[in-house]
Image (cartoon, rainbow, N blue to C red):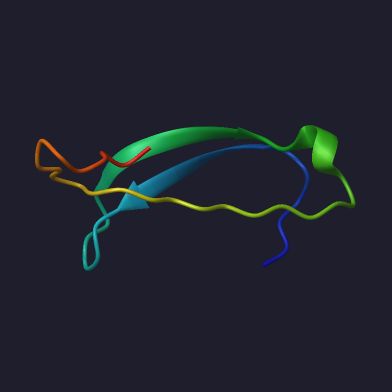
Amino acid sequence: MQVPVGDYTIDIAAHGSTTPVASFSAPLTGLGGGAGVVFASGFLSPARTDSALR
């Protein structure tokens, strides 16, 4: 997906929901003409031994 250069807030929502469970700042103004990758990993409701979404 192509987006204009700028600073963004990336919201993460559970499947089937539009309510964000986490938001992350993405300062992309210095990436003009470049490429980037967004990767999210973790659990929305982690057990004590699981990693939370970060």
